[in-house]
Length: 256
Ligand SMILES: Nc1ncnc2c1ncn2[C@@H]1O[C@H](COP(=O)(O)OP(=O)(O)OP(=O)(O)O)[C@@H](O)[C@H]1O
Image (tube, rainbow, N blue to C red):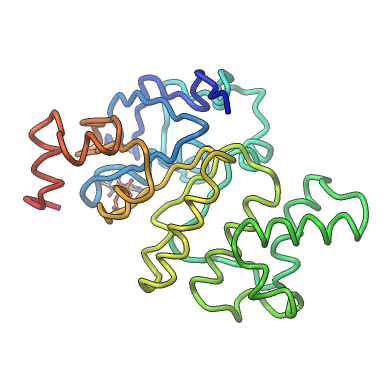
């Protein structure tokens, strides 16, 4: 498979302020379409804030001010002409706590495709729902109870349902904000396996507190500290041969 040399997303001189608080400082990063990129760093370093810039989720925070440029396929996502609903379909997001809608499993997945007109009739929609659940590794577990409420599933299943809901609208990028932090080790392993299976189809960016997880699932790792992007590179390099003292201290557990 030929790889596209162009990054899927680019961030240039990105700064985020919450009122007076300078949460992200001049961050530059490229995200590639065929890779999983992990954001790591101590609590409060700005990982989630920066992740949320990538699909303009910070627009919903009144005190947040984002400057600099973030582009998707070269197009500035903060441009006035950008349709934010469309953007969030192209750059989907999975949250820390599984958050299915209080609706059936089927409806959780069908909601987005219906909103975006991706299925023309019921049979089409059935196919979209099945394909999305299959891709999310959940189909076999739920195919006989699609009308049950999504909230009746286990935590790990709910998180895979949320992933199915995101991929049902055919995104280009999937952002995951600590997707396993509320899950047990078995459910976590399933999500990690799923991330591996989805890699290549979508650009994936994952925020994680768990360094082993970053090492297992990602090809690139970005280490943030106090709002700065301290180091960014191949995951294998960051974990075995970090260039910066701060990165080394963090990955060897000297602070966190
Ligand atoms: N809505 C907000 N209003 C004001 N300050 C905020 C807001 N959200 C985050 N912050 C501050 O911005 C900084 C970065 O927070 P952020 O949640 O992005 O960090 P994080 O690295 O994801 O942390 P954690 O790993 O604990 O989730 C922190 O100092 C935090 O207190």
